[in-house]
Image 1 (tube, rainbow, N blue to C red):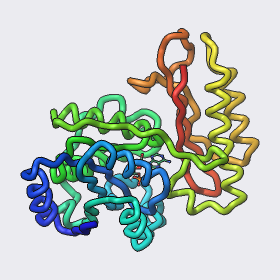
Image 2 (spheres, helix red, strand yellow):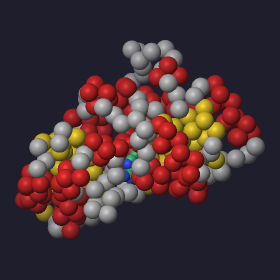
Image 3 (cartoon, helix red, strand yellow):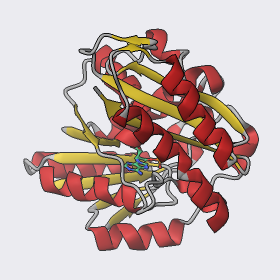
Image 4 (tube, helix red, strand yellow):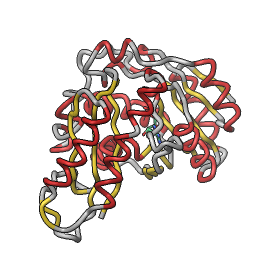
Amino acid sequence: MILLKKAVDLTKELKTISDAGKSIGFVPTMGALHEGHLQLVQQCRAGSDITVVSIFVNPTQFNDPSDFARYPVTIEQDIRLLEEAGCDLLFLPSVEEIYPNGTAQLPRFDLGRLENIWEGKYRPGHFQGVCQVMSRLLELVMPAKLLMGRKDYQQCMVIRRLIGLKQWPIQLVIAATVREPSGLAMSSRNRRLDEQAKEKATAIFQALRFLAENLQPGPQQEMLTRATSMLNNAGFEKIDYLALADAATLEPVDDWNGQQQLVALAAAFINEVRLIDNMPLG
Ligand code: AMP
């Protein structure tokens, strides 16, 4: 595996690869890698000649500075895992490499409603930050395929929009959420949970599954109230949202017509750790 830290070196290396007619697949991450990330690497390898992974904890997408400060960093283990997984090139830039002109005057992106609903409402500025880092990374790598996890469903929709806005010839591949045997979605943030909290945190999966299994056309409020109690009873101290939304637009759905593709979305805190998850429905 080639490890590069400088954007100029990355551009040079990727040019050689493209000139040789090889296709590039890209998996951007913030490190603290787990099976969810490694599944993306595997899927990338299956569909591209060269698999590029980046590890960069992007400061501009953290609306809460303490969340940024506490974000887990396990770089040596990450490098070993990526080598074992068959990653060809790891890009490990500094903040200066990603934002050579600083972060004060970065571009803004027209994300429409996606910017301010769900995650956007509770993490103001988050998706602008995601687009700032992703536009820089995608301009550098310009992969034929970009692999992202369904675990961050709204992020996938935002990046789909970014690719559309920029008219980049990039195929977005959305991979299934990888879960623990308990159902808990794998996340770098799970490292901050002890075993007891992880056990309680499975309620988020159970609540989503409850909604999926009991979905009937008509008003959804009663089911949502019951699913919310599942989180409260498990010990989630704060629920930002637990809701049903249109799978394409993410607009909230209170009354299901029996046809629309839906997604159940959740974000809640356990032991001060904010977890998100989602499930397709309908
Ligand atoms: P992150 O390092 O959290 O920024 O995640 C990097 C990529 O891995 C994103 O596309 C995530 O959606 C994806 N990812 C994170 N957790 C999972 C998971 N449990 N299953 C599938 N993909 C995931």
